[in-house]
Image (cartoon, rainbow, N blue to C red):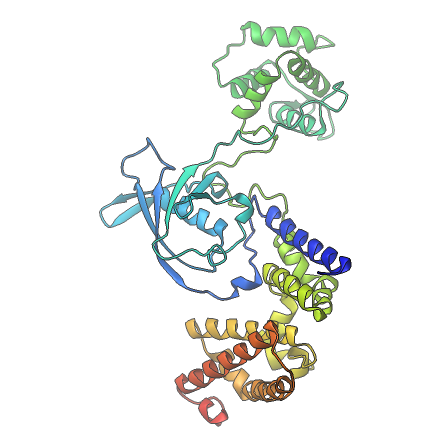
Length: 440
């Protein structure tokens, strides 16, 4: 039975993960988890039934085949499906039309008959245990399924803040400055501006003599000068909501607004257009890993075995710590470099974390350039890992049994020793005065 304090910590750690997942419902801005550092298995043939273009050009393929690595996020998969679904094939070539927006794509997984949730956008296919030849169906998501946001304030005496903002934007679009030379002069909407607005809002053909237009000016042109000011325009919408709210919501929909008063995306728009957070730095997954107080506190809490498991789960869910990744990437190019800054021998959990970064860089080097591997070896990185391995064996040998993290730590070091030995013998040519394999 866990003590109350530990239960509370584990609960809060679970809430942090939920915050991260919910923050990515409308896009990830390319931010990934620490667990996604490794490419993982190549899923070379995901089968996707394409219902996104149902009833459209018959040249759109009804079945898509997509290959990705298992560290691909669900949101990235939605983007890829949207691109492939919008291709018209002509023989072996294709024309790429506007991709279906990821936020409009609903993915249904045949295994377990599961609808992949928007809160899983930031999860990798590996986390969701995707297999090769996985079967999926892609549907277009309804843009009107969102919860209705109020158009009026709490006591229903005026427009809500969001509704006022939208209607003000409309007024600015269809009005003109009274004095074009003075940007601070008042804006006025004349008959032509109102006519254009009504046509766009109702998607109907309206003439200047129609009662729909003339009655608007009769009721809301307070000074009878033939122009509507902003407050006149807002009064019109306030009254319209009181009389026929659903008609107003229909006008909003014509302008591309959902029931929650957010713009629904259009095919071809920026994939993160729905994401309220404006930069990668604002994403909780990265912010948590980048803030030293948050990041270090997790390692401080890991002295207890039960809490350690929950902390490690949060560390894998958050992004890789940028400062630590940069240190490992730059090595001796960092001012005042020492191995103790990278491998903290008194903290097995942080050493395991760093060893995973090392393995990820090794994997990346295998696909690109081995310069980093050479440098790591020549400044003594391999010997450092061997020394840690010997020290750990000596310390662990005195314990009656190994913890989960001790086992993972030893497994990670053995894996790296194997990779480095193979990488060293695979390197061709000279690096300085020595062949790299001689360094080992």
